[in-house]
Every structure is written in C-alpha cells, then in structure tokens.
Length: 287
Length: 299
Image (cartoon, rainbow over the protein chains, first blue to last red):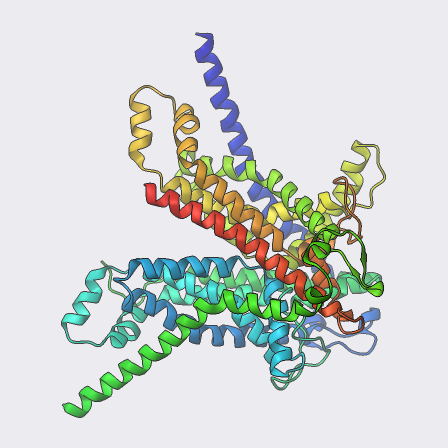
C-alpha cells in the first residue's frame, strides 16, 4: 500500500516538474519579447528607421539606422537568392534523380546536417579567407558570399524535409506520361512543394538577417547605404552590437530600439512562414 | 517532333549537369572549409607546436606567445554549465509534450519553440545584458555573499542554455515520437502506470537518442558567439569558478578581427582558433549524428 502511495506521489511530483519546465520555456520567450519591447519602444521613432546616421550619431545626436536596415535586407536578400539557385537543384536532385539511391541520399543528408552544425563564426573566418584569396575587400559582395555558404545547408534541409513527403506515385505517374526527369523535378515537384519551398526560403532569410558572427569579418561597416556590391555595408545585428558597447546612454537606448526593430522583422518572417506552411495552392495535388 | 525531343533532352541534360555541380560542391564544402582554414593557420603551425598552441596558458601576442588554453577552458565551462541547466528542462518538457500533454498544448508549444529558435543571437545578447547580468549581479551575488559585476561564466551559460533549449527540444521530441507505440501498450498492458512506462521503458529505450540530442546541443553551444561574448566578461584567464569572467574561443575570434593585421601572426592564430572550433564541433556533431542514425536503424 505504501509502495503504491510512493509511486503515485512520484508520478505527481514529476508531472508538476514537467508542467513547470514547459511553462518556463513559454515564460522565457515572453520575458525576452517583453523586455526588448519595454526597453526599445521608448526610443523607437520614425527618425530611427527613416534616416542614416548623421554627424555625432554615435554621441547620441540625430540620425537613424536606415543604413543598417537596408544593408541587412540587401545582404540577406542577395544571399537568399544566391543560396536558392544552389539549394533548389540540390534538393530536387536528391528527391527526384536519386530517389532510388537511398544510401547516397542519406549520406548527403548527413553531410548537410554536419554543415548545419558548423558555427557561423567559422563560416565568417572561412569567408574572410575566401575574400582575401579572391582579392576582395570588405564589401557587400564578400558578406553575401559568406552568408550564402552559411544558409545553403539550412535551405536544402528544409526543402528536403518537404520533398521527402511527396508520394512515389506522383513521380511514377509523370514518368509514365513521358516527362523527362528535369521536367518532373521543376514542373511537378516544384509546384507540389511550393508552399514548403517558400517556408524554407523564409527560414533561410531569417537566419541570414539575424546572424552577426558570419559577417563580422567580411562586410565592414559604414554609415552610408551601399549603392554597389563592392562597397562595405552596415548590418542590423552589428549595429545593435556596436551601439550597445557605447558608454553613452542615448546610444545604448537606441541599441534597444534597434533590437526591437530586428525582433519585429524576425517575428514577421516567422508569421509569414507559418501562413505559407498551411496555405492551399492551386497546383498542389492533395493525396 | 525530332527537334522538340532534342530540345527537351538538351534542357534535361543542362539541368542535370547544374544539379550535379551543386551537389558535388555541397558535398565537398566541409573539406573545403577545413582546408581553407588550415591553409591560413599554416604560418602559426610552422613556428609553434600544436601542443604549445592548445595546452599553453600564456597568451601574449605581442611577444609571440599564443596559448589557447584559457579560451578553450572558458568555452568548456560555459558550454557544460549551459547543458547542465537546459538538459533537465528539455527532457521533462519533451516527455510532457509527447506523453502527457493535450493537443492544444502542443499546438501552442510549436510556434513557441520555432520563434525561440529563430531569435537572432544578438537579441539574446541584448536580453542577457538587460535581464541576466543584473540578475546574477543583484540576486545570485548576494545569495553567495559576493560582489559580482554580473559579467561572468554563469551569465553566459544562462543565456546559452535558453538558446539551445529549442534546438535540443526539437530533437528530443523527434526521438520520443520515433519510439514504437507497441512499447507503451505492452508496458501498460502488464500493469505499469503511465509514469513507470515512461521511466523504465521509454527513457531507457530512447537513452542513446537523448544522449545524442544533448551532444548536438553541446556542439551548438560551443560555437555560439555574439550572445555569449556580450555577457561573459572577456578576461583572459583560466576560470576556476562560475562567478568569474571567461573568454570563450568564438569570442576571441570575434573580438580581435580588427587588430588582425597589426600584430605578426595574429591573423594566423585567429584562423587556427576557427579551425580548432570547426574540428571540435564537427567531431562532436559526427559522434552524435552517428549515434542517432544507429538508434533509428534499431526501430
């Protein structure tokens, strides 16, 4: 009887613990968002997001961080585009052309997971060596190359996860109608997985825009909005980092506002990704 | 008809070629990264022995002394403590979500985990400075009767543990989901309670998967840069306690890129640090992934 009692108490104890750890995770997320909101909102102004830094900006004078916002969008946009040009063919190749070579595909997945695990600072250091090797200077282009390398494995794996779920029957049906492999890949698979591909692109874009360590060596930093690929550029994460390390109160407060802007951008991307994930598309065949 | 056919075939071949090139590039990527970093760290390796670089604690770049031991040990401290904090939370939550929780809890937790995973490193750093550093300084410090600035190994670990929670949790949920339902049914049918089933059957069966999830979390934590750098203090010394500041390896690389060109061999030692980071993280990942694949084979 007592033995049974202990068991019941034990189960109850652990259920309470489980409940607490689950709610702790929700609480921490709320705490992060609320603290950024509370600290950032008072300093957030239209001036912040519509102007580039003026003289004396880093001493708390006028100006905004438009240079960093635009720079980050250029950087993440460019590298997402470049990564897409590599990732889509690889993901399609793995799931259409190599569909029968299970061992090979699994090895590729394994390698991609390894690449995914490499820290972004290592990509940054590697990007720097590539930059020096190619004779480039710190520039938007060098940053785009680095971030592209960094987000390719993320994009491929996300696309791959969606394409894995397409039934074999669809593949066989298109072949039996006489389509070539690339037609099956780009016309049928691409449309069937369209919403998942958009989600993968958004995921990679979010990673690209939020990462600081990979662009630390390669993009440089400037107060101007870049007008060509060979110019250096500011990025939002680095601008937050630099402003926060200032001893001046106003500049620090603006760092919090910048952090709020970045958080909002990331939240929008994440909501968009969710919307696309569920959306029904005209060309999708439902099995 | 003939022309149309060749055009389609041609297009097919072009696509095939491009796909193959991309795939080969991606497969060779880890090798290229490793070789690129090795090439850049060759100058330092040719003048200093590997053992000296890795196990000497004397870091004086000006006088040509490059011992990475303080940084490697700081990294180990921060990483291990963050895992100790996050591991039980992740395990309990994963069990809760896969075995006990109602559907709506899962539906709520999915976006929570996703958003937490998507928050940029620098935002975690800002949050760490806003909440964690004052917490360590004002709450934890007095608790141990100490005057702390708050910028310490403990702060770094706390921030890091939050960052790796979504990562570990996702893998753990996957691991528990991949367990066959028959296992639970069999245990329940011989009279085990729900908790006994979890404790003696599921956790036991999932044990290798759980360990690999922690391993992957550890390697993710090891390479995390900006967030840790912002709260850990960055003092070059071998840490002997959690309240002391530390200086992890990624922070060393990130902090010194500016001076890279002014001191001889400085760029080379930083690239060597990146190489060390790459090798450690990849080895850890490799071991954990292999363990996970082995587990999946068993089911």
